[in-house]
Length: 539
Image (cartoon, helix red, strand yellow):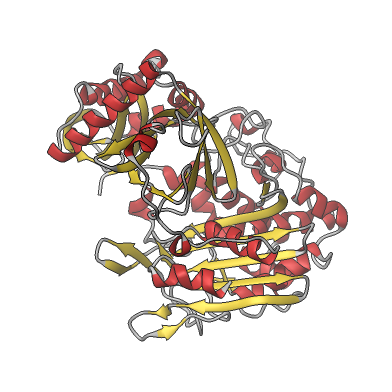
């Protein structure tokens, strides 16, 4: 396990702490890199890290504790406790909020979010940011991750219990479990052994951006250590926090494998109950394998490095006696071009975009959807590995014209079938056109017009879904009320300026409005439809 974690640390892809425990036996616990780069203070199992969204499971458990005490019922309408909430919330229950099926728009995606991050706020003011926004869908009908929902739950915990969120979690969870190195993070308090947060930039590590810790609140403001999180897992799944009935509620998924502040899925044939977190300067992962009584904790004080979930799943595999091969251990071999040509083509993933396989000289390359093309290195006649990310690809049959490939990544095996030559040519031509545009930094024909059209259609609430990919059309239908309100609030459109082509293939435009600016990233299909798009506040 140390060799695995050290391999990531050596490549500057991991800085933090990792812990693995089976039952009460700690199998592995060690820190890597520095808690403070300016003082060369090392990370250790007792270093304190911001948890980000791992906080949500503590919030969910707090709600269930209140239910056990007769203070609420998770099936209660939210309006029972917030009677002045809008009429759109009439059918919304606490259960919907716990499971991200309430339809409340995510306030961390609002255009003004980055501008408000540095400033102190209150739970009530946070709720006011999204309370009167249109719901994205009728409660209970769909799933969409929402930090707003978990902020709302923290507000309800305070309103119902008569205590602050920090006090309730400390008294009812941290103190009983002897989690003395856990708490609600603060920008002003002196907290011994707290790690500083960093981001991995073009020139190495940089200090992370500032966020006032009143902003993430009950959706992401707690801190802890690897050792304290082990106490939490042992307490939660050992019956020291909730009754069996409450724990069953908390770990039963409703939609999209999501339960109450926890994801319930499978990895390598093993059931895993987990959640990750991401906040300025920190990336985290907490996993529990109930059938194996295995706990895995990965806490990083740097963003932009390796995924803590990726590291966590590999540590779990090693703990279960499985062989994990490091990228550095894989031996590259040379294959004849005639063999490589048999793998060239386009393959449709079961869920998501196609993967294009092509030759750049004698180098086999892979490009998944709008992602950047990456070199693939042969390990055998039909198995290839990537160095930029931890992934392997098998082609079948070996040595001839492949009919399918299987992508192995993050504990999942995804098989993609070869597409016909005409479809492959269309995708390859689009990829070649992008490579040329990226080199020359020129916009795709029609992309500026597409941005202007989308803005106007959102303003009127009448998007032309036929000019979008099915995925984008579905997402737009789901979020239309919020998107329409956002665009209307920006005022009249004044200009659209091309900023460049991103490495993922997006044309990036700055849209200037009367009341601010937004950056649009759009990807067009070969036939001119908008394949994907996102919008964020201009930097």
